[in-house]
Image (cartoon, rainbow, N blue to C red; front, side):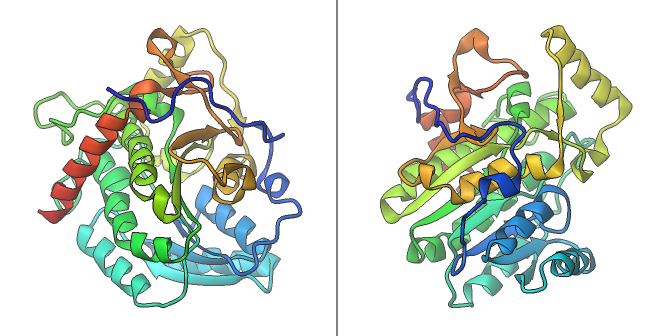
Length: 327
């Protein structure tokens, strides 16, 4: 099994866990750049949108709830009256909705310099999307897989371009089982499913970069950190207790980030010149993280599990996803 990235590859960005979106974009002019952010109506997606627009970028706000998305756009314009914002309606839990959104977006001839796959769900009770896929795999990975695939022609035409996919240190909670992505033969566990979906997000970035880097498209996976947002709305007290117990077993403490701190790594990965010749890597705290081997893998600390950047698994997941979205 080959690794997409090897060793302790890290950047020296000068930023850290406490850096904010304004820190990483200080002095950066994004005029002429066009980005698309999914899950733009709240939380990290809203802050990412605000930060990019505040520095001159055109941002397409893609979200499921049109009314909430419009209110989010208005909140940005109240702070930045000249913000160049567009809207797109997409429900990542419906492949039909994803296809409609992609077709609408592709009908516009304007470029796309960055696609930020920010939307997602976390630790949901067992359920399925309208297409019959387990909810976290279907929304967090498969919906974005189809959307990115459909927009790749525009990204290539607009190159250099980037895809940034939000993952999580939670990928270390569980591996993806390519033989049972829908938990049809295994007992469902919300955190195991979340770990699998977040692992899939990293593998997705690895394979995008492998397939399209020679065409000018680079891809990055991002762990934003722990932030109080709507993402945790499905977490029951039982699930929260289970997660805190697992963290406590490793003897580590946990620190929350503010939303501007949480969106900083996403914004950095989408714009930093330090990453111009890189891709297929996992970023956290506004730096590229080392690859963890074997027993070093744990829910705390910095780094990405080696299995989550495995090139063979990434290719296999791409082929499986391609088949699933065609069904």
